[in-house]
Amino acid sequence: MFLGHFALAMSAKKIAPKTSLGTLVLSAQFADCLWPVLLLLGLEQVRIVPGITRVTPLDFISYPISHSLLLQLVWGLLLGGAYFFWRRDLRTALVIGTLLPTHWLLDYFAHRPDLPLYPGGPKVGLGMWNSLALTLLVEFGLFLTGLLIYLGTTRSKGSRSYGFWSFVLFLAVLYAASLLGPPPPNVRIVALSAMVLWLTVPWTAWADRQRETRLG
Image (cartoon, rainbow, N blue to C red; front, side, top):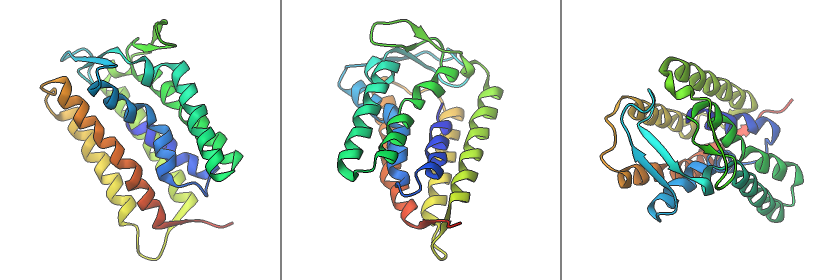
């Protein structure tokens, strides 16, 4: 899952309207932001197997720190707790802490049975990536829903909305490239390419500052 995680971040703006979209994106995409760092450090493993699914050539061998259900619950508790101590806002802290492990839930539908429940534990996954048509339907359906919820919750300040729409265009280009491009040449390129997700956090924070919450 890719666009679906951003969709949930945008949707969460309705529940926590005072929270920066950048913070919500960090929570929803924390697992995928952490994953390339751990790959580069040699703490998690992936290999490139063209054709392993219709959507991605990546075979996720081991990623219990970033993508196991148990550790995502722990990361959610830590991120939500950090936000509470920083802002003293329990409601928003709960939203952030809950949003983070939804990453595992969406990936459960998309991945092959490679998602661990806990480090060393059984691996699960329903394999939506085996069908390109179903993947596109679900991804774009979720993204459109999240986009409409976000646009219904916020409005542009004056004529300034280029930050948000440039972000949407960036996601579209990135997603198309991942689907239509050739398999990456090696795992290091996979990790370095995935690091671009860290840019989405300040980008969406900047874009969100160009918008304001709708009243009433």
